[in-house]
Length: 247
Length: 247
Image (cartoon, rainbow over the protein chains, first blue to last red):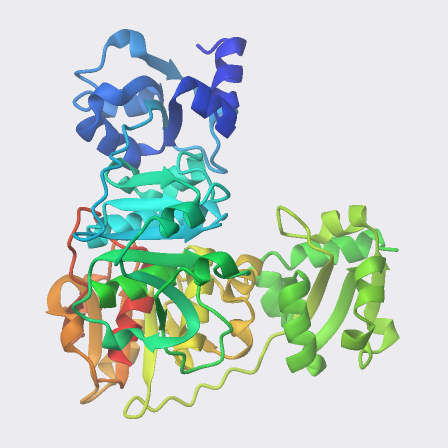
């Protein structure tokens, strides 16, 4: 059974302010929950799940203290879920420790300028994880990596990729002799880039692109050659395509 | 002013059955509406727009008969909109004539097996348009290309790409000496494919992949090499990456 205060508390975690204060985020649905329970059991602060899910997943929760598990019914799940179709189980998870030890001479990082769509950010985190990119540096006006929609669309990759928030202009100004790639409409075709695999890949807001100030700090302008008529590519798709050529 | 019957009629177009019966679809928001009015004026069946949008876009609607334009207020727009944030203007548009003249010896087509997420289908249509792919062949259980969410996420590309629905197994069995690429986890790395650019690229449902029956009809198994730990890539991202190497 869920008390009113508990419902209110969980609902409050849909706001970044409260996630930051509590150092918690929400993960929902059997797939990501199974991954989190298997890989990050110590980060689990609470499990709210349908009886059915609990009885089918005894093995997954066997190392979790009973006091951290609350069986709920479908109506209660609906009240605390942030999904349009609530899906069996909801976790409260402690935010992960971020590794901010970046060596731009040895790794490629993704830098995001104002990616505001949660689905796009989540998909980019998943792409980073696929290509072995360990760090994503976001501008302050990007979506929050612990937004529930972002967490969902990472499909678990939020556990493995370090997402940092910084002033991008200040950060780029500090770099010396580092490749800074900017994805723009007229630059070097990406097919000519194979073998280059360290530095910073800068991806801009879809409607506005990369801000002028950042663009001036980039020393390699690159392009995904267009053969048809679409005006642009989705930011996540562009990130995936460029990484597949850079790495 | 909007009558009750009109509201009901527009709302009914959220269902494929009614879109098919009426041969109509809905497009929303200033960006795609501007593109449709500029490129397909004869397909416009009705414009529902806020007064403000109408007075700012006289030029766009100057060739549209007044009887096809209904000024509405924000409350009315909310009632007919399928967006979570209604956006100034909503069009009823006649479905486009599909060009089903495909020459697999001269072009590459995308074939989608059970892509059910409207955002994914829309993004794939936009990617096709970027890379100059003219045809997408969908299984019957893919999302409907004229679903409002699909139309939104194509960002206008729905006008330029021909989306057909077919029995994929029957279609593939008819092909002789045609390259049929299947994106799988263990195949030829896509980096080795440059220069091949005709045939069929088969993309599977994200959780289930490509169905066994289709997979057996594919004669080229290809893979986006993974360097990290993500279990899979988003279907649209994978499509974009593969096309950037195939074309």
